[in-house]
Length: 319
Image (cartoon, rainbow, N blue to C red; front, side, top):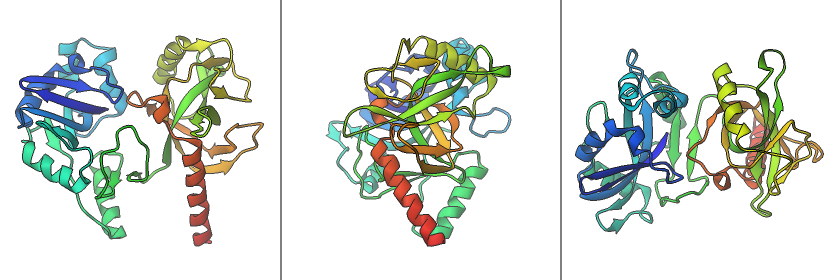
């Protein structure tokens, strides 16, 4: 879970990217964060990771959410221990770091953070340009239980709330997009009584409308389907939202408020009468709810078109 930590004297606050205060969810992290962050006043960015007590490996994102959804605070802290992995800094004392290059921000982090074993650590960094070395580092990350790497432009500033090609996910599996849920279809058979697939959309940055990209019916556990159905019934509306362009007949329509991280094998051109973005996904698969991402921060239609063009150029080179 992406979490921003604010320290002001002895006070510690944990915020999501949507500026929701999650401090009460993770009170066990407050003392180690107070110790780890040396400045009197500082804001850092990082990832909150749940650790499996038996294997020591990171646990899926949904396990972090159980700290809020299924247990009391004390019981959850014992059952699902969490660590905070710091990867960026926004403010030190009265100095804003947003416009500094990443190299400078990382150098600052190494001076101001004192790691606390098993609770607070700096994300491991390697500066690499050789493809073989990058693959070896990615393989290492996978081996110890992570999803992959995040590659950063060393000159990049901290661009809050922006999706750009300055930070890129490197994963050995499928590519992913962050898409907004705008509708759903009821499931059949084992999935009867719950929504079995969801219609996902991307933001058209030219018009401000959400345009459909894919229907996604894979990747959900039975527990996911139950919880998602309960959540979306609260967002259900009578017809398509005024900010959504959709041609698909759905069993339910929703306010465009929830973002799914969605894996896919390939981007395809889609007839507009099927998907209003003009693009579609091959083998889409649900990964998780992006509770840290607002709908306006979702993948745009323009980004998907750019990725499609890059994909086609790569195909041409392989051919």
